[in-house]
Image (cartoon, rainbow, N blue to C red; front, side):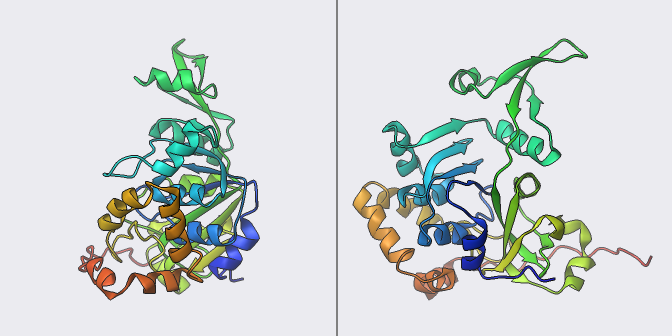
Length: 300
């Protein structure tokens, strides 16, 4: 039975006010299109979890979607601070929890494995432990060594963008692989957005590339260019100009609201958003083909 539906339908059906939401992707394959659709549908009271909030959560916080953020490292990558999220935290308007990258991923690993917590080695970032009461210490019953622990993270919904998937939700991704698999297995509901929807035979021809299997996926949506201004390896490049421009846009509430009005509320969907970026941007973000060598799976 096909799980292929439109992105607006998937967001309406599977993202609910008050949810803990995890939008996966580490610098790469960040699901901006889904974030924008959440903004258009005016979802409220969300807890936004991400290893790196990136601009997607700056925009969603600016739009009033969030009550809390859970993160490790917060910034506009390569540019500076996430002005909107940081300002909301400093003004006491947004609850927050901070972890190290490894701590955040360990939380997802615990959630995916059905464990209540995950032990980790002590780190040099002792200030995180002081700032976050959820980071606790236990004694290893085998060595007697003291370890840190982080609680399991089980999002209500995870959103993962991939290069290709079939209509059943078997999803393949390559390039920089972040926490997509862990987030999907830890979550109660999973939305996959994909650059391409391909026949099941394509997925079966290269099974080791399937990181997210259909049985944990609730909805799959064809959304080309869904990562902009992030990137999808082999499809389009990262829009560094956009990241630098956002730093200026986000200096004022008026600037952010004007951007949201024009680029999110003012477009009906991501296809219209991409078209509005224009041919010059499309051309600038094009990438040259670079194919991997084929492998032989053999007959069996």
